Length: 148
Image (cartoon, rainbow, N blue to C red; front, side):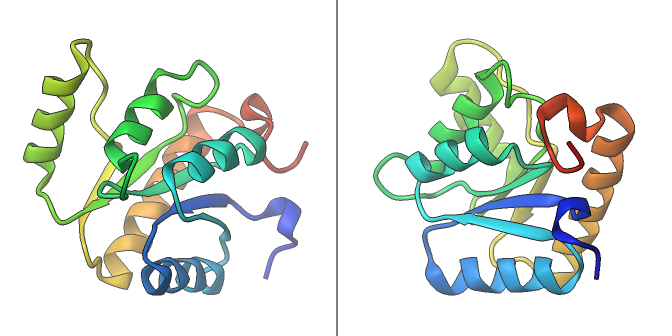
């Protein structure tokens, strides 16, 4: 396993403890460095302090909604380029339609989208693809990620 400083940081924002533990354990066992948050507020705080390379976000967080957090991330000058994988019981088309109706301004579609509960293989495949894409388009030092 790689030292923590060289592992790709993945922020998991999920309110259900069992799902959050599953995702974090899966990511860790595949060589990623998971960081977890159980709410919209904590997720935004972790994104700002940890500068993850990728975010896995539950679209249906209680109270202050994962959909709202997604809009905040994509409108933030520092965080907007971090790829986001949305996990939801809604299909992608419905999620994107809701975002367009709520925003008034365009918010880009998520880089990854999986229906809950995701299959482990599908999740890791998307994470690998986005981690490679992100590494080729923006060096970790750009966002203050690992290696700095």
